[in-house]
Length: 132
Image (cartoon, rainbow, N blue to C red; front, side, top):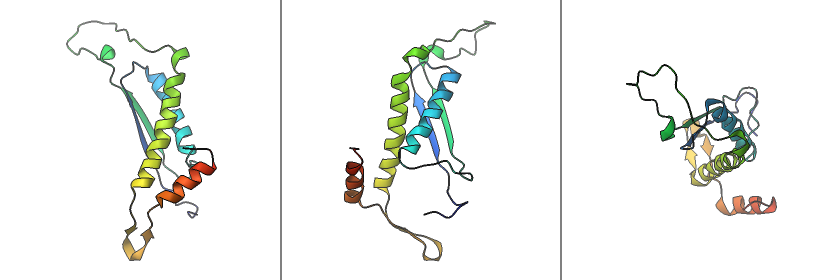
């Protein structure tokens, strides 16, 4: 267990080419936290977790040379966001699992050692909890 006040932080970047509004991107960020919770993150008092989301949808690019006073933005209807929510949760969870699997044992200052996660043990734990 990590001592209180030493939980650390995580940064999650959510990128999409779907035309989503600023409000909808914020909703994706909240779903990203659900993905973190699926791998045990609890967003403790001193954790500095940060989630950002952006869309690079071509239809919403701003023409800086335009003289238009008003602009319109196309975005996905709120009622059609469920697949985006699910994808965000699953991709966030998967990215954490990938980072755990890719990690190697490291020795740091004063001999502090962070051990690599045994892949077979991770598979067993996930299988016991009905995960792939």
